Length: 112
Length: 113
Image (cartoon, rainbow over all chains, first blue to last red; front, top):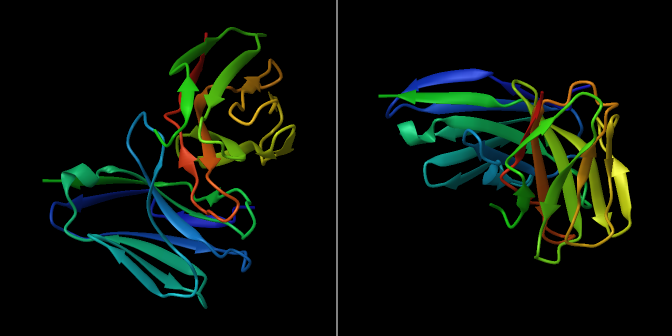
């Protein structure tokens, strides 16, 4: 049973455009929702994270939107750049040191 | 690399052979994790440890074993029982019990000869 469903699997965006990646979760006990960015051959690195008490969090060009009632959250990358080309993973966890549960990833390509 | 050292970067396994992947951290953190990454499959949890001399199975523990004899080291052994070991293996740490952010190492790519 996949607890975090991520879409799309791949995404191609023009430079300067907006990249949008969506995730849906099932377990209402999740209370921490991070996004990770991974470049080829490297480990994932935390990009931005949100907790369910807020509906939106923005850090630079990256924004998480969170809809608790729909059990969905999304990553928006504004003014997408070729350097943003990477694989993005959403994840979720339950309070108390529990491991993160990851989506299957979205491969983003930003073309000039 | 997230405060985690993983070695080697590439590892080759022959049929029927056990191989051990190294994961080290010198930040005195308790919780450590092993994930397996396959194309299109995301990161799947193999084992995790929240304290020395204790560890729990993740979603895909079959064919793997771990040990946690000291806080700074959490090695993963891929046994011959793991029939499809070719993957990218990632080790991660959690700074404190109240922290929610896992930090990942650079990974080890295991290939079968």
